[in-house]
Length: 511
Figure 1 (cartoon, rainbow, N blue to C red):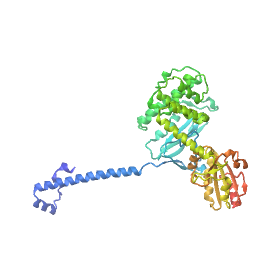
Figure 2: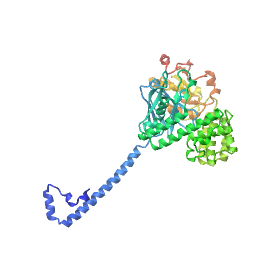
Figure 3: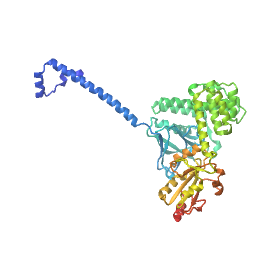
Figure 4: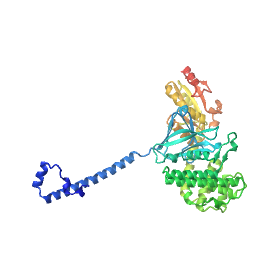
């Protein structure tokens, strides 16, 4: 702005004494030179300032780097909320997350560097939700009651991501679509009988596209969200039609589905892979109600199908994952087959990682140098017998908690155990957690989630069902609690749960 106004713009309009003296002493050419110098200095300062501001923005960007964690909170007016939690792509069964006032926990911080998933719902009323969370996300969950008919209600979670680029409409698209489907009668829930519910897949698809168009017109969703969900809704409809044709043993014109069969850009899309799986089952196993994944794997390897080589590898990888979870005894054989025909390094590296982790976990629970029923923790990997653990804390009241990652009632008691630890001094009472998990990774994930992974007396037991501990105390169900006195003798071999007042009374009487 200064350079466009000329030298006169630098003069003080009031005309000070110093400025008059300068005009008298300095000739006009010299004044112009000085003005040029001043302008150069000013521009130099501007450049330096711009450089500094760039550096500042870089520093700020580093400061806001996303943490290796996900925080999930629930509105504290909610009594109880349960959701399935997936922390690992190769996790077959979900972890359980209980939040709410009744659960004595309204927030949880989950350490992770990966994408995690929460999901849930009620299948018999076609109510499902699913949300993927990236590291650094903070999620607030509230509940909205939705009338599914005149006599029934559901509690649908409403998601708010407080530090994400995703919009509210993107994170709650499933909620908006479910309400639309109920209002437009695409889903009709019978008042009396569950099996009489009506589900119009064509109408649901049209509702989904109409909703996407509406949200796009108001800039409530991004272009990527729109395109991704539009194709996913189309794939869901096509998959439904294929499965229906197979189940009812009717002919279906595949071309009418308008889905390309070897579309490489969709190979990472789980919905597309599900569509291909359904198509293989329909085209080549039309009259077979249930076909094992190992049989499907062999068929795709040995027979000519509509799949090209790349699509074939994607599908075989999907079958192999199912074999890993469902036909465990056959996994090694089919992994060898897969490696012999697969040329994709991504798949090879993935399965090598899975196998190495599996072997490591199996070794921790079943190594030959460990006697039956050995306890180990995540802190120092000590190998102790149950008797050694008890003697280590002799002179204290000892409460032993038998639990597992998959045990919902066990997990619900964890906050109450935490309360007990805070209520009593460690010199008075020691709480020992023993997991009977057969999957070491599942125990490790659950321990971190329950914030007991850094406790020395949080153990997993090897060869649980063969152990003397299992036999001596006849522990057939969990959760199960043993209470020992200061002398090491059993006070109660089926003690009340931590959530029950009777347990506190029992401990107080024994201190």
